[in-house]
Image 1 (cartoon, rainbow, N blue to C red):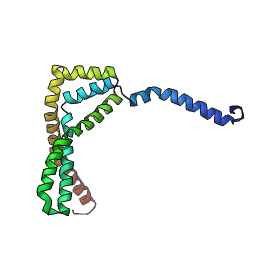
Image 2: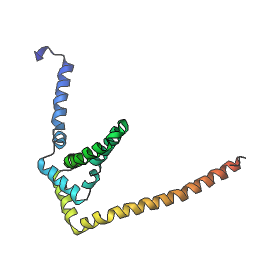
Image 3: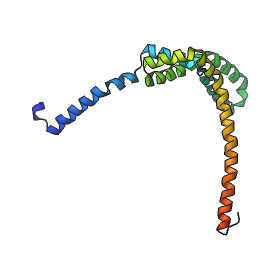
Amino acid sequence: MIVNAPAGALRAGLVALVLLALAGPSLSQAQPTPNAIAMAKEIITLKGSGGIFDPIVPGIIEQTKAALLQSNPMVQSALNEVAARLRTELAPRTGELLNEAARLYAAKFTEPELRDALTFYRSPLGKKLVIEEPMIVEQAMSNAQAWSDKFAEEVFARFRAEMKKKGHNL
């Protein structure tokens, strides 16, 4: 009977109930609606990000084929045939990764936020961002590498100068 339960246990039970009640909204976010997932998939597609999963299935097939080939090089022709068939048969499994990515988006964003994002990515500016952003990121990474190389030279020179002051020629 609850009447005989210690006061600490009752308090712990009440705290657990309050925490469950407060966690309700976040638990519902962990289970996004089918509509939210569909919007998230469309966002991923509009951003051109769905293609990042395309090499995974063929890559795993090729890795497996290579491992099996090492154990018996005489079956290369048969392994090539099986690999070709499996690439065709298993290619749709990439969709599982897209679904999982869409679930991640749908768990982090509300449906109104996803709707706003869709509106943006369908807009001329959103389309331009999708086209221009990869080139901008590539150039920024190239610039960062050049800056990093120059900065490393500067740091190296500073180390040498400081060590020279301490009587060490490096």
